[in-house]
Picture (cartoon, rainbow, N blue to C red):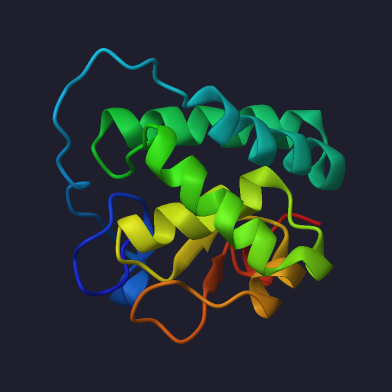
Length: 147
């Protein structure tokens, strides 16, 4: 998500209700398998649990649309962010962080952003970003969620 510094590749709120996005970090192409579906499985699961199946399907459709328009990037999950995620889980053992949350922490560091898209606000209040940011900004905002 856009952190205001123009480095991240996912959606962030800009002034006046508009959105802005900048390119994701470049990566050299290699033959390693890509792991992106697991990144989307967690928000789908949580959205289904918290908001219902229809809202979850709509959210995935929105992500697909934003991806096609270049407003978000769905990052590849390779060995590097998985290794960082495992370190985050070990460091915060008492929180019993799930892999998806730990991967979000790792990707936020890689994309130099403080913004994460999750409905799991509690863990991201307890965990600090790995980079220069002091705290995570969690989207969507509670007021943005359908009740």
